[in-house]
Length: 443
Image (cartoon, rainbow, N blue to C red):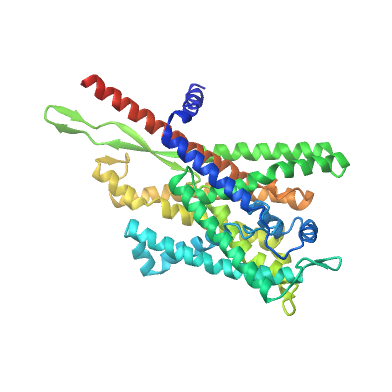
């Protein structure tokens, strides 16, 4: 209770720290720009017919894609592709660093290598956005509702204009995300997805309550739905804070007439080291081919795409199997990227620290790898259950995607990570203040 009170007191001092205030305002400003752009439509589209089409597509992959784009897809705005092409490109580049010696070497070159890999990711983003944008333009020309086409004037001019507009929107979003990460607070890409989901929550809650008012949902069903959402939120908070503490002992050493060291500490290993990355990456990899299939299934000669889109719809066995497989894979893959047991063991050895009962060096590295692998199994199971169990409610009760486990996980984890960064800035400012007071007293 005292810790929470101190945190609340620290958060109240945000306005007193110019740098932190500037970062938060910059982040909010960039998110406002994103939300404004999500309402600028692509020319040549009948908005009313498009809205009717998406109402008919409720519960499909298009609905899931629309959630991640913050409603930009259903309105076909300049940000209709969202940030997913960038995420897909980042996944491909990270996977290639494992098999490509050139990229692996760049990864070890520090800041210069990171910039080169980021440049390759940008190129990949443009390529994937061109692919998706062209498929979307072709698919839109085949969409119609009651004989009324979605595209007012189909043809090569419309396709070219749509591709250029959508690719430009995605590249701009990529730049916005990078700017938020560097000059704002929190992870820019995650915050863009977060703001898109949160922007649709009021409408989703309102539509659910409206269905209860009209009798389509019973009051008990609505109450159970919100109860599940609260329970999932609580489970996410608990697991994200859970950690395995590995005991660390520092060896005693004598410097002059004084003894140093000998104190015990711990190495915290989070159960879910990968955070919100696995469900975002998994969704991105599934949405990339599935959305292309959804938009091109009405094109002549590509009717088989409709069958692919149907079996990869949320709630279907192929979707559930692929989603589970990708989540588990990225939980282990991303954990291996962010935590290196051998490097950690070497750092402990250099600092005169060791794990009681475990020899320093390779034995410590093997032990840390063993412990991390076991808790990652638990973390992967937790993320999978949180993302898939509410999916059953979505498929059975046709509730909005916003009440799914993936969206709740993203919202809760991104909020926790952003608040943790804000508190880190506050703690750093308090430490600097104490150091200044100490210097004044000495002088």
